[in-house]
Length: 436
Image (tube, one colour):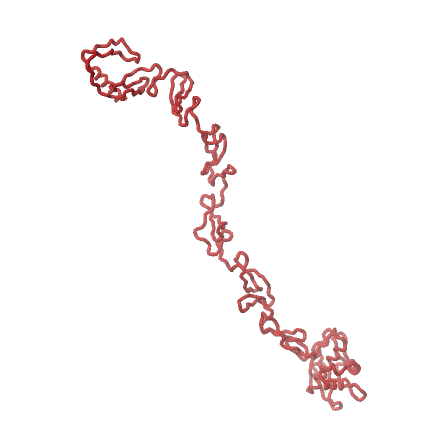
C-alpha cells in the first residue's frame, strides 16, 4: 500500500510539472469522482508521460477506490459512498440479505448494511453456497477402509466419529468387530493342512507361520505322522491299521495266537504256533507254518487215544458208543496185547463219562453171539479174540478181571495186561495199573 501511495504521489508530481502556463484549478470545483477538476490542458504539443500502472486497473484501499488512468500515468482515487470491494464501489445493501454475485461468489449483508463477499467452493445458488452431500443424513456407517464407526450429520455434508473399532468395522452389521482371536492362539490353515496359523498382533485375523509342518497340522500344532494311510502292521494284540489322522495305529483284527507276516511283509493272524502239536479226536496235528495252520501228523489207531499231541496206548470207551462198539474196542485191545505176548501192562483204559461197568461175561456173551470175522483186521485176530472170549464147549474164557469189572468214569486207573498161565498158556488180565 505504501508503494502504491508513492507511485500515486510521483504520478501527480509529474502531472504538476507539465506546462508552466497551465491554469491553476479552482479547488472548489470537484468532478463526479470526488477528485479536483484541473480542467482541460491548453492546445499544444503532446506531453510525454511515463506509464506507472496498467490502464484501467482498480483496487480498494479501505473505503477508497483507486483506478489507473487510461494513459497509465497514475491512479485516481474516489471515496465509495458505502464500501469498496473487489475493485468497485458497492451499493448499499439490505441488512440480512444474501445474493449470488456470480456462480462462485456469494454476497451477504450484515445487520448494519455492510456487504461482504465469500467464495463458494461448490458453487453459489439461491443466495447460498451449495454444499456437497457426502453421506446419508443421520446414517451410521463404517469408515471406508478404516477402523471407525461414523455418524452422518443432519445435512449429509460431513460425518463425525462415533466409535473407534480396534479390531475393524463390520460393514454388513454396521458395528465394531470383536477380536478374531486371542494372543497366542493357533490353528491349522483351511487352505493348507501342513501350515499353522497364529493370531495376529492386532487380533484382527490370522497369519501363517513362515515354516510349514514337516508332516501335518492338527489342532493348531505340527504333528509328526506315525504311519501312512491304509498301512497295516503286526501289533501286540493283532493286526493294526493306521488311523485316518495318521498319528497312530488302531487294532483292526485281534489275534488269539499272535500276528505274523507273510513273505511279502503283509501281516495276518497266525493259525497256529510253529512247533505246536495237538489232538483232533484221534488225529495228531502239528504246526509247521503259522499261516497255513495245523496239518495231520498221524492218525491214532482205534485202540489208542490221542493225548497232548501224541498217540498213547489207552483204549477209550465212550458213553455215546453203543455197548457193542465198546466191547469190540476192548476185544481188539485184548487181541493186540495177546499177539504181542509181552508180560505186563499193555495199555490203560479210559472210561471217562461211562456210567455202566463192563464185566468179562458181558464181552464174551456179545462176541460169541454177535461178532464176525469182518469186525477184525485178520482171520488170526478173530481167532485170538475167540480164544480170549472162550466161545464153544471146550474153549475156556481167557480173561481175568482182578478188579471184578471194568469200572466206569475212570481214566488211567485200570489197565489191561498179558500174563502166561500154566494151564491155559495165555491170559488177558484187567487190574489196577499200579499193580502191574
